[in-house]
Image (cartoon, rainbow, N blue to C red; front, top):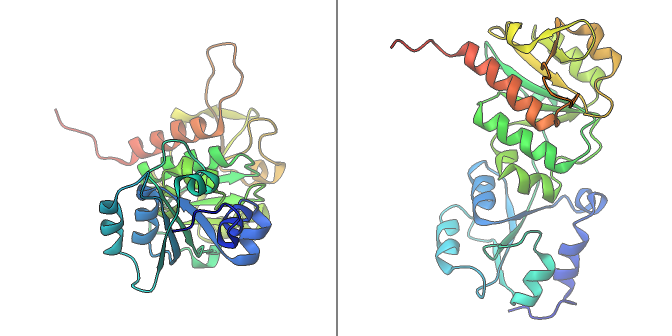
Length: 266
């Protein structure tokens, strides 16, 4: 039982809140049974598991044991220590350190008719996490993050994705690399833009498609608009002139999914 907040292992977990430290140690923080469970099922390697018996249940440990490697160190901590390392309120007393899985565009093997989400310069971890939940719900083939300002495994990204960051392939690359890869695989690019655009409901997403979105503040860079098969827009009926990127992604991706589903015979 670790009861001191000044324990070196605890200090190290706190240091992993910084992206540079996560990269240096090749570790990520995953908090909560659901997220840990999804990481394990996706093949991520757990290095350590921290458990607070005053907060969590030994039953959860038992469930994870079925997926964990036998050599994973399980460390019990006091409630005061867990409070220091936890990222969320109402935690279930579990926090784990994992090795990240970093894949490249070359690792992606698109299906015959893929549907992908592409984000450019996304900066808020919460937005990226929410888009990952959408990608999982729509069974998107991958999420490509171009020129990211936040790293893919930011603890807040993992939390807001509810662990879906582990269930859908996600790649970080440059915009130039992404365009070249999409063109090479004959995947049509649909760019969200205010210029020369048609309503998203009028786009044909039935073929290989990449739905590309930029930040709410600056939109997409001109490279995307130059290579876009069709620019699209979500018509706005109120005084607001834009939507959060995670909301926009959900709207357009589920329209693409609707078009791809067979009609229901009533």
